Length: 430
Image (cartoon, rainbow, N blue to C red):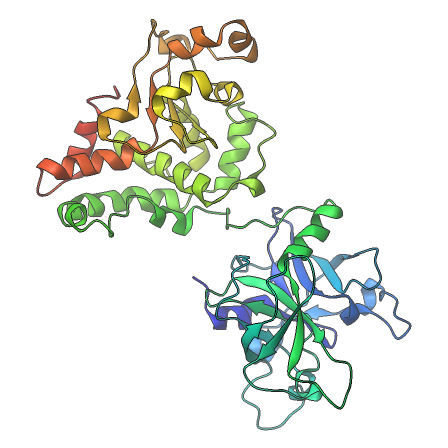
């Protein structure tokens, strides 16, 4: 998880005399700088030419000097809209900054102009903690109040600075003081909710911002096979958890983005599937599938793209947004989800209702094709006879991988990876 020092040093930048925040979109060649429109205006209230806009790390703050190359300046057609998204070349590695609508324990980071040339300063950045917000709106500027009152000259230059919650997730951008009366500030400031930046990005048809860092599976592997809330299971599966770490370490280095590219090119995932639209439930289920299967197969393959092609020859994974039982899949699962499946492969479905171990499996109702023939299910197969296609499938609830461990723990005091494999092999032939 990011900390406040990461936000200061790696994600906060100077934008002319203001501040900006670096955000990663679904494009490996660019970064976004979220800031305010008024930060990049000239005296005539016109957008400055790119050559007159400077975006850089503060060397004293970031411990490195770096100037970002601007490719475009994106603002709303509405001149009173203070949102600006600056598109810059991605020529430096930065951590992924998560976005959120949770406004608990928030703080504001920026570069106050008063500190730039001040003597005996602790640093060039200023962190101001927020006492409360006056609204939960996601569609308009939200007033908020710091836990201490600040004069206008004390925070000038912090426009465009990030407002982050207790988990260091970006919830908005500081725009300006809510009162323009120089004599009375009342401690009020304004925040542009992060949703409005995402809206502008969509309007401009720019690459979307992901809610999760999909460069690598990374910490997503910690979402699965976590029995810490079930003490009985947790105590009995300590050895299994230790055995599983080697497979989690492999998956950590795989890239979801590259894996999806391969699966789409191979016709295993519908081309209309949008990564930015997939929520945490999807990624948790998909991570469970991958870790669960490679642990079953004892697969030690560092190349994620190569490994996933191999997995899909035996296991075709899809995700149901509708909560179904495994026995409902034949009649109710979206048919397009099985297009591209090898006819003899197991159909593993994520998003299904949890149940007991043996309830996670629906045997085929008709003769299963020989896997060696590698016939591929096409749309025409389903349109001719959905029931014929689905009746030949062995359907598996993705939850079976964690349920197998729990089932072992019911009768075995020290569950190992071999117990897990043997349990799954009661149903899955590998």
